[in-house]
Length: 100
Image (cartoon, rainbow, N blue to C red; front, side, top):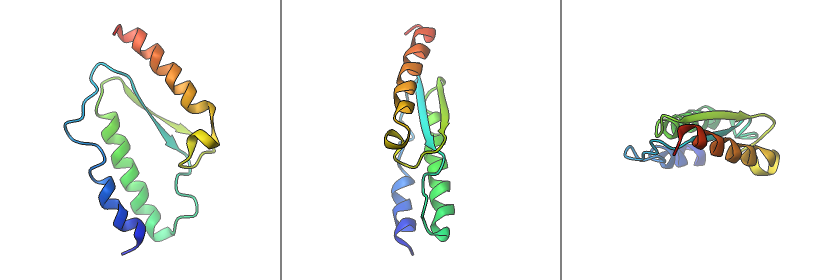
């Protein structure tokens, strides 16, 4: 078993089933190329675990969405520094529209 596959057990419970953010905006930023350089054998499992985690996060709020950040790795703030800031402002606008 590879190191990456072994770490997948951590991702399996990354979001507790009880986690809820109802009534609050949730924006999940997804890197376009999160695992550049990962061995091909590990890549499929890593991408599946990430997908499961992101979908679980989105499922915590009816006001959630996922945004894929182009030209980015797992280090989105370094690769595309404006993306997290834009997401914060967008969440603030969503909050105004929700009225909470």
